[in-house]
Length: 280
Image (tube, helix red, strand yellow):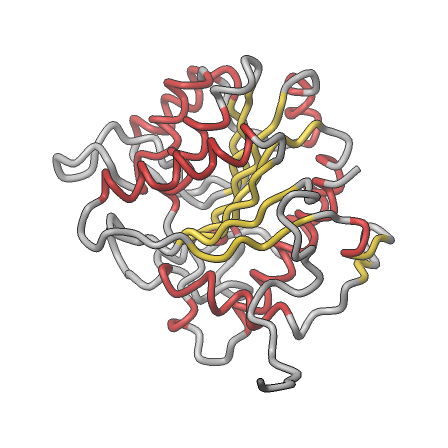
C-alpha cells in the first residue's frame, strides 16, 4: 500500500467528517443556461486548488478556519444537457443537508443553481430572506422564451420568499422592467441600514462574483463595469456578520477567462470571508 502523503483536493481547512460538521460546502459545476460566456462549471475545482494558497486566518474577522466547522462534500455530478434534472439533483442534496441539521455553502457554477437551493432551504424556514450581491438584476420572467435561466433566478426566488424579503446590492445592469420591479418592491440596498428590515429573518446570502468590478474580477461570464471593490464587498460582509445566516453560495466565476489566476484567488478569498460570518 502507498504511504503518501497525498495532496488534498478538498477546500483548505475543512472538517473531513460530515456528521459532526455544521456547514456543508457543495460544488455545483453547472452552467447550462448562461447567456454570454460559459465556463463557470470549471470554478469549483479551481477554487479548491486555489484555496491552498490562502492563510487559514482572516485578519478582517480575527478568526481562523479552525473555528468554522465546515465539511467539503465535493462536486455534484449533473446529467449533461438536462437543466431540470440538474436542478432537481441540487434541490435533493441541499434538502438532505438541512434535514441533517446543517447549512449549505454552494460553490457554482452559474447563478441558476441558487434557485433549487432556495427551494430546499425554504422547506425548513418560514421566514427566509435573500441578500443578493450582483451586477445584474436577475429579475426576468424568462430569457428568449426559457424561464429557467440564470438571468431569471432572483425573480423565481422572489415567488418563494416574497419580494419584500429580498435585498439586492451592487446592481447596475438590467432591463427597465427589472429596475421597475426593484423600485416597486424596494429591493435595492444602497446603505447598510437597508438590510435592517431582515434582522429577524433567516438569511441566505448569494454572491454573484460579477458584483465586483472587472478590474478585480475579469474572470466571469458577464463582466460589468462600475462594480464594487473587494474591500467594499467585505464591508457588507462585516455588517452581515450579526445576521442569522442560514445558507450561502458564491457563483459565476469562469476561471479560464483570467489566465493570471487572480479572479480565482479573489473568489477563494470571498468564500473564506463569507465562511467566517456564517459561523458565530
